[in-house]
Amino acid sequence: MLLSIWMSNQTITIGKISINAPAMNAAGPWAATKKQLELIYKSQSAAVVTKSFSLKPNPGNPKPNTYFEKDFSLNSVGLENNGADYFIDAVSNFKKTKPLIASLVGFETNEFKELLSKVNNSNFDLIELNLSCPNVKSEEPLGYSPQAVDDILKITTKLSKKPVSVKLPPYYSRQQINKVGTVLLNHNLNHVVLINTLPIATVVNKGKAAITPNDGIGGLGGRYIKPIGLAHVKIFSEHLKGKLPIVGVGGINTKKDITEYLDLGASAVQIGSAIENQGLKIFTELN
Ligand code: RRO
Image (cartoon, rainbow, N blue to C red):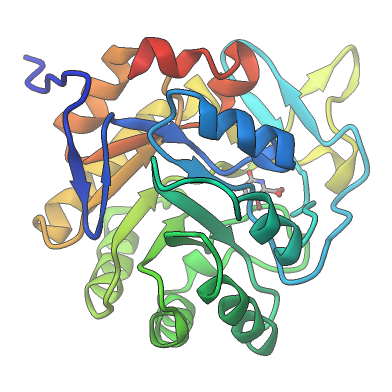
């Protein structure tokens, strides 16, 4: 039986932030420019989440680096972004009608410190630390190492003046999840976002790889990963026992999808691939 119901104008509290509807955008290429962020701000999205950004602009991977179909998405964007100053400026005039969330990636600790000090003095309300980008060819996403997660969270939670959340990759066992879950509980986190794209997928389109970078290998998103996202919310939720809120993401297109995520332990959800397929009007329907 589906247990969750929500009404418009209800307030959902996620740690130190409040939203007035369950669905916000996920970090992604639909949130990379000033214009896009403004449109998300004006939409019914419950918050504005940026494309993951780094201290300095990053050109990302050669195009085509995204591929969308109705039921799935594939990408190897490669952290393409305009850099911290651009994103900080992009949201500087937004009023506090909804939380402004900075999705951050750091390539090394020092760079990361500088990035956080910039974001500390910005209009952003919360940090979403992305430990799960699948498209850095030489390195496994940090989220796969409980030790690396512990190390980076120690630094981030100490330096950040904003509440910190963390976005993790899909795992392959309950044991892995429980190890990382235990690490999360050792830190002063606002919430955890589950899950990023599934790191290694490929699509053959008209006889060739649908995306150019990394020999056609990229992160899989969309409806295909909903069962994986749901399982992560369920298993993390059992492990975290309500001590850390969860925001679910992966394959959400309908209110029924949202209900499933909320029933398994998520406080709110993020929408990714469905924005690319349906536009921001999806929030009017979902929220
Ligand atoms: O930019 C990307 O290639 C990317 C990132 Br940062 C991420 O977190 N997840 C993803 O699927 N692609």
